[in-house]
Amino acid sequence: MSLSIFRTPSKLIMGTGSIAQIGQEAKKLGATKVLLVTDKILNQNGLVQKVVAPLKKEDLSVDIIDEVIPEPPFENVEQIAGKIRDKGYDLFIGLGGGSSLDVTKVLSVMMTNSGDVRELVGIEKVANKGTPFILVPTTAGTGSEVTYNAIFTDTRDNVKKGIVSPYLLPDVAIVDAELTMSMPPSVTAATGMDALVHAVESYTAIRSNELTDGIALQAIKLISRSLRQAVYQGQNLSAREDLAMGSLLAGISLGNAGVGAVHALAYPLGGKFKVPHGVANSLLLPFVMKYNVISNLEKFAEVARAMGEQVEGLSLREAAEQAVRAMAQLSVDVGIPTDLKQVGVKQEDIAGLAEEASKIDRLLNNNPRWLTVREIEAIYQEALEGRLEVIG
Image (cartoon, helix red, strand yellow):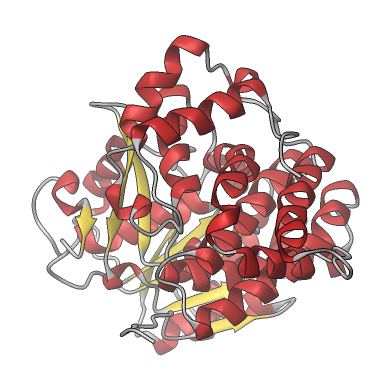
């Protein structure tokens, strides 16, 4: 096994009702003046108060800023940073989906690192550790609470870009399935499939190892068996708990093994067509899996088994290809778009998308099968037409 580094937050607190611990955890971090970073919807639907109450119980000063927007551009985090820089906050709490969590991560390091936020784009460009922060997800999908990545849209070229640094790991992550109960079906589907993308990509990635493999397979198992119920029976706590844990595990695997071509091809869709990250990933997953499957038949057969597919009696190749069919069916069942036309992509856009995706070497170099611009364009073309039936 090649050299590997395994990173997770300093402390993970999991379980239904675990948000009650946040005040005590804030005190342990020496907090006196807390800023809660979220979006307007969560501030209006009552979830914010479930976090504020245990903080105030510990006599902490709490301010709320609810200005995070979906798929945030760099300008969003810059504007928030400008408003809070001189306020003396000694702890940030990020509450929400991946957008709020990513904004909180980068706000933390912007307090201790000067310059334009774009200067932090890339791998380990952050010089100094930031303000302590706690992350609390309200969706089960991005895994941002346990990764050291933050993704933003660069409006200068309409491309999504990542900041990657161990300083983006939170001091504490709290995963409480009760906080995900209010997610509507469409968000549950997109974020749940996004978590599945993280698990499958990290499991089959070049940088995967035995530790991340076990974590990723358990994530695939939990998400596959619970996603349909969580989407169509939103108050099913057992399904929500499976999804929350599956998303957490997928995030840990993603954070250490990385992801590949699905994410590389999804970033231009998000930047140019404003397709939500989870939807873009979920739509592309079966098409990229179809391309990748021959690179590691054993692993893709294991994906099928983890999804609960009956593969006994099938050849190794048939079992591996069953994973692609099962993933495509799951996407259809939970309402994910089945082709790029449904998200506004036209034939004339394909070449430009492929050119942009081909530049994302950080992700493509971790994909289990090599892609050139030509192969990327072919995958986009199949996804444009919704053609997946040619396998098997």
